Amino acid sequence: MGVRCEVCGNAIRGAARGDGGARERDGEAEQRGDAPNGRIFAHMAGLTSVQPLVVASKALKAARFFPVPHKFTLGLQPIKPSEWLHVPTAAEMRRKRELLDGADTRNEVLDALPGSEFAQRELADAVEAHCREHAAGAPSAGAPLGDDDIELAGRLVAEDLMLMERRPEGWVLPAACLCFPSRWALADKLGRRMEEIHSPVPGLNDRLAPKISQFFDKLAPGKLVARMNSAIMDDPELHQPPSFATLRELAPPPPVDAASAGERLLLRMERQTLRRLPETGAVVFTIKTHQMRLPDVAADAEFAAAVREHYRSLLGTPMADGSDPYKTDVAAFVDWLDAAARLPPPTRYDCSLDS
Image (cartoon, rainbow, N blue to C red; front, top):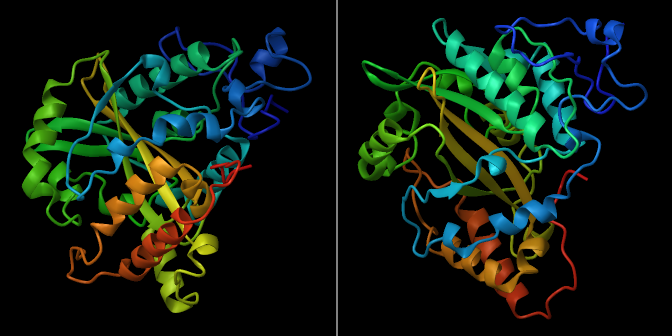
């Protein structure tokens, strides 16, 4: 038997890929005596010493991420290299492994086009190097094995990973490991230009498409940026492809109102980062999903006020097809926060749904 992480179950590689990328099988490190005994630290020390999301969430709970009225902006903020990827929870990594190993889900969450192999390899090297350098107590042995380098990188971290490459037709998505989508499918985006990827979002291309393309063209290696995106959801499941919404339409839950919103609704926030890979020039787009219950949002009065007014300005905003399926939930969300603002603040909060 090879060496496997006790937390996430992934196979462990024994050495860094300084040998041109040759991969060691998961028993070789054990035979050499390099692998640890007892608790296998694997690829991320954070899997065995989980950093509470409440700590990471302090950087997320900024009013600037919720402008009033709502407007499309890049909203990019520079970050340090050490801040690129967040320490995952064991629950996130277990769910990711289920999706990547599942016969019915693997092809939904992982795909790559021919010609993206060099960028995938560079991404996997960058992710593994980050894990070694910045995860507290990171070991000298490293990564799980995968069929593609995009899978290897994806199994190391909780973030969804997408590669964007400059082609003659524009910036294109040729490879991704997308386990935690918010009602969109990788199959609909793979190989498409950035403008086509964003087409379902009404008004976004008109306002931001040229700026996004220009930013990608000018992004320098070594410069990392982050932004936030958010949505209101009524289910804590991290994996929400379009089929998830379809199943709920077939058996819809009871409508959400202001009385039930506190128990039913969640603020789903996506921390998105961008960085250019120096050798291939590909741009890595990551998404780390955080979710907060409404009582946890309300616990910070300043943050709650920004979120509440941001979503109040969205009431009645149509979706791309002219419908507004989230209008009821948004109204209930805002009404609940309005009511909560009139109550004494709670004494504690915990924004993690993964504990």
